[in-house]
Image (cartoon, rainbow, N blue to C red; front, side):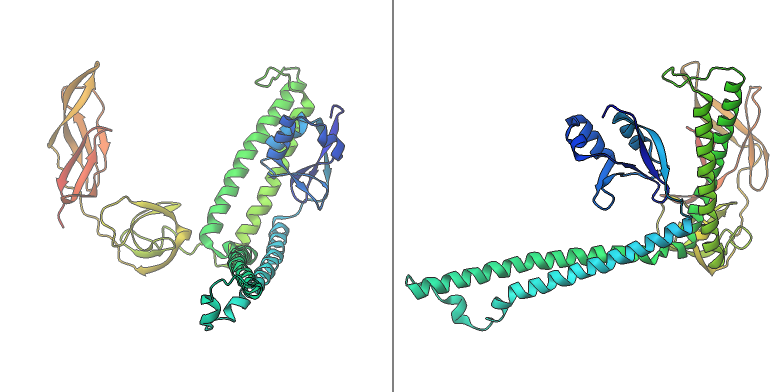
Length: 406
């Protein structure tokens, strides 16, 4: 394939298609065939090679297409909205489920048919214990019994196939039901991903817009390889980013609509407080340790020690007990001193820090005989092997404890 041609970008599937004759495929080298099969799959339905990946992860497929001479892009079809994509995915999954269920039923029927001759003989002890007799009738009986046992064994393979297709049908049925779009936590995560993508692509679009203006002013912009970037290339990148921004906005709108139909995110910083006992999807009963603008920090009830975990407010299923955590005042006082082990001038040394100011939640420490600015730290209660203790970190290597009152 030396002549330049266009690969097809199917807007409906958001995949790349390569159309060429079998003779052209046979003429490819082993390395080219390997590169093709690594990035594309043959479609009997479309009679073409279809990329394994879809937009926006097509750069490998495009690179492989260009290496085969497909250097231009030709667009076909009409881009589906995200709602239409979900509907189509559900319809196809439903069709797959029905097909797999049919395969499972057929395999089960074949298994029953194969094993029926032996199962019908249950209770006939003579049939199973009859020795091989070296006569015409005896040999015929032995061959018949061996064939029946072979069919019986093959029946287990058909049952295995039936079980396999049942599992495939169940997976397809779950996809068809689109249960994730009725899960507030899932929707909340995907909406945040869309917002992040939109923000990133807006920055990319601004960068390409500035690049276009710079090139049109006569400035030279180059790739890492040293190849000069033309204004048309930069304009193509800019338009691609705008197109993908529209796709992400459409997806975000669909997800937000699904979330709104479920009642939105019911919990936030105003109705969830430290100390509340809540039910979180993954872990069950949990105690809220702290709350933030987007997430809560919690500890699984009944677990000993362990790390505090974070979850979005959308992952909270319900409030089991609305008990607010009483905030105890930190116990460190003005005048207390702490000796820290530090490195100075490449050597180990000791430094004494004194608390010069303390509030109910924070302390300020100043190093003795030093002009360094005071350090502000916020002590907190932690679980240790010897029970709960107050702790503050001076730096990455020095931490200090004080007993906590139960």
